Image (cartoon, rainbow, N blue to C red; front, side, top):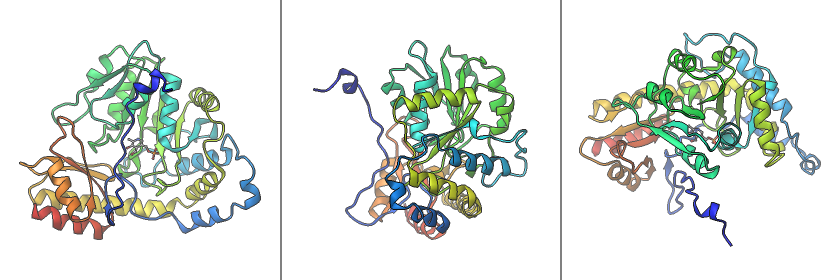
Amino acid sequence: MISKRLQQLNPYKPGEQPDDRQYIKLNANENPYPASPKVIKAVRAVTADKLALYPDPDSVDLKKAIARMLTENRGLLAPADDQPELPFPITDDMIFCGNGSDEVLSFVFYAFFDDDKPVVIPEHTYSFYPVYAGYYQIPLKKVPLNADFSINKEQMLAEDASGIVLANPNAPIASSLSSVEIKQMLDAYPKDKVFVVDEAYADFSGHTVLPLLAEYKNLLVVRTFSKSMSFAGMRLGYAVGNPELIKALTTAKNSFNHFPVDRICQAAGIASCQNFDWYKKNCQKIMATRDFFQSELQKAGWTVLPSQTNFVLAGKPGRTGKEVYEAIKKEGILVRYFDIDTIRDYVRISIGTDKQMKQLLDIMKQL
Ligand SMILES: Cc1ncc(COP(=O)(O)O)c(C=O)c1O
């Protein structure tokens, strides 16, 4: 009964959600702070008669709210001082909305990459990319990272490929390329191939490549509400790019599911954009907690890769990531390890509240 296609799939494995006891969950890069009460008010305002009707398939009001939030805030919740203004206003025809950025990325793989040439990704990056490539039978080229875990830009550009997908900041590595470095890559890259920058964690870095959209029509930026906007349970992601690329994504969506963003999600998304100050404060808190946490870990003899995200990758010399994960789990806290060469000796820890991170620090200092 099962198709040959399906038998070849290798599905994504998300961070575990065990229910044998109550855990502090620091394994899925979720936001430890709740959504704004105004978002809950917007959810409650969706009436039963409205639920009987299909939502706007194009999420027009939501796209307008996202475009406005980005334009008014240099593209980020908490832009760093040196993040330039956007050289143009972002308009709703530059935005595509989907059911989480996972779905947006799936449409991206379908819309822009063919099966004759590989799509290029870094060897260690978001582990859903190879899953999409498998799903659409697109060949994949994984480029090893440099010894310091940075992206090997030259090698990524050297491949004869149908496109590049780069998570920036990268996950689970936590560091990023600067906008100048990405601009240099775009300059050296064919203008008729799509260059995707997945900015799921950009709000925690203070930097975005959105200003480069003025110059590069082949750049597509993918974003999520899940991390910096406390929305992982609702599922909302978006892409920002040239209207031609957005049209292609819309064709992919309308050939799969006309209504991936439901009525409640659209209302809550609009309220989130209008209350971005709430998320900005939380984002700044998370960044401060992260900086404190990584410096304390370093003082305690841990190796920590400098993070520009809401998680850190940390290792204790002489212990595998799995051993560290197990020891921490015994104390009621979930983190994540990867049974993969090069990062086997690390655990990935999402940044929680100050209280949660102090509790974790006490456990880690004992190890
Ligand atoms: C780099 C990256 N991109 C995209 C996603 C997917 O986010 P969502 O589907 O929740 O929007 C994640 C989730 O962890 C991620 O780490």
